[in-house]
Image (tube, rainbow over all chains, first blue to last red; front, side, top):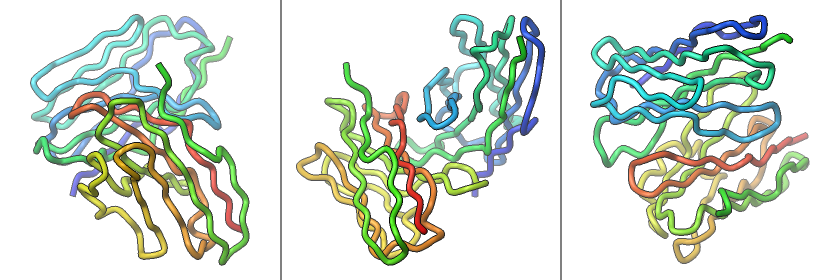
Length: 114
Length: 112
């Protein structure tokens, strides 16, 4: 059974700081990994999708890496801003393309202080 | 392009009542998913439709939950009768193939 763990559970940083969020998963047979953000009372916004064959993906100030063999992914946020404050979730999709379910971590609650 | 839309956004019902949640996926997306997050827990998969067919419903907690997808378009998730432990946020999501999954804003259910 796939389990996803996110560390830390909460993080508070001053504006402008670079930061790293961690995600680990127990079964390395994944098809892809997706990072989401969730603002309070809102839905999930997809940030980055990394296929199992890829090592990293970048979008603006965000960079996500994937080390499938060790079961780890990191989300790097450069020059953090107060608007980055949200809960960040990672989710993995099983290795079979017929696998449909995402397995989520519990999330990292990020607060960026002005 | 419209995203995944869900209705109602919030619902408060009494234990034993029935609630029906609706989801309209992104146009053209054959895959539709239901997930939920109960208080203090991670988001968990409920079921997956491909067009109008249930591809995987192994995450449905019990037979008080019934999901349908009419004509491969919108989907409904009915909880009957609702119990206190059903409180949480129910997310609908859709995708085309195995690529990015797009989530709706969620339907926040409180059973009192």
